[in-house]
Image (cartoon, rainbow, N blue to C red):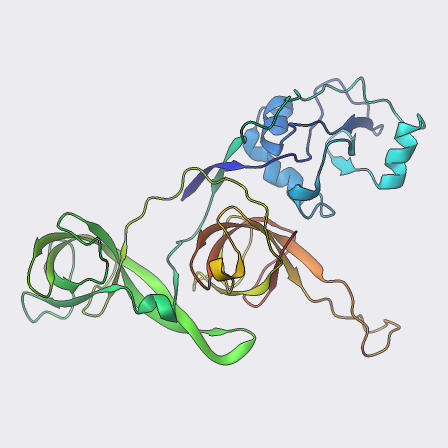
Length: 341
């Protein structure tokens, strides 16, 4: 699935131009208004899709919302570093390298629009469904004969809860997978895994059911399989700053994946009732355990380990689908997520 034209406001990367940088000696660049990951990667290395690699190589950078004009970058031959505040003060006092010799990114006078970039996602945005959502789906209830399994070209009868259901509408077919229990509340079943099986199109309307033709089949299709509207992937997602503080955890992902990384889809136990919106960026963290040699009392809390960043690409009332943008190490179901405000 392609997630195209994601918006990133003022961000922080740049790469050296040929012949500009001396080996081992950094040049200093001051972030300007209008600098973006996409634009700087495009301008200096002619590859707008390279910026996730630059981001991943800078573990101290957790949230692009927190990057602002005036911050300074040290640009080496092949890498870039965000200067700590005290070093930035030294540069401002004239103790470091001047940034005038470094090519400048074009500065915009006003923030009238958002830059657009392309993402690749590996995973289905419908591979998890909550218990509440499961009560609102359509289902295959029968076919024209006694066959157990159905395939492409077969006629089936379906019951629909979609108020917009009509002849000609297309729906994806899913088989219910394993129950999903909340990682922190083991006895609470919060939904089911879904396995994509194919697609169908409604062809005729009857008193209690619709007739439909299976148009695509990628596995065994049986009575009881559920139907979800076929929705084209978003081609434009605007980055939105989280408006409220929220903390949750990853509750589900593709059932075939043991761990998660960049470009994977996962699901969290936060939704629009928690203030989550499509376009929010969340930080993925894991509680840090003390080392065996650590000197501490039993109640001390260590800072969480930051695992990565994820973009909200789909929101329901109590859950959301995330696209992992950056992963500094393997991510697992049960890892925590938090908003940055």
